[in-house]
Each structure stands twice: as C-alpha cells, then as structure tokens.
Image: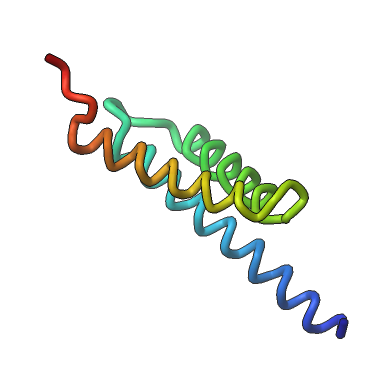
Length: 87
C-alpha cells in the first residue's frame, strides 16, 4: 500500500472518531440537568472518540462499531421521548 494513501486513510478514521466524540459531548451538554465544566465535556468527548476509534479499528469486529452507534442513537432517542413510560 502506498504510504500516502495509508496516512490519508488513518487521518480520515481519526477525524471521524473526533467528530463522533464531539457529537457525544454536545449531546452530554444538552442532556445534562446542570452546567458541566469544560474539562468534563472534553473528557467525555475524548473518551467517546477513543471508544469509537477502537471499535472501528476492526481489532474485534466491524459489527461492534455499528452496534454501538445504533445503541447510542436508540438510547438518546428513547430518553428524549420518555421511553419507557412510567405508569
């Protein structure tokens, strides 16, 4: 594999993970009941980015990354609409 292509692919993967981490941090800020310190938001963002980077690295299986995204999306959506409804 051409080294330039390899570096480009690695940069795309890392950038995608950082954007996903930022999205998780934004969601954490909006969902939090109280104001979060910037340091905590950065920790959440970095942790989410690393988790998605590991899941996408195909060390385990490419299915884990997809499942994690679907689960996170379902969890956030369910929380927004009040699922499960308390009776």
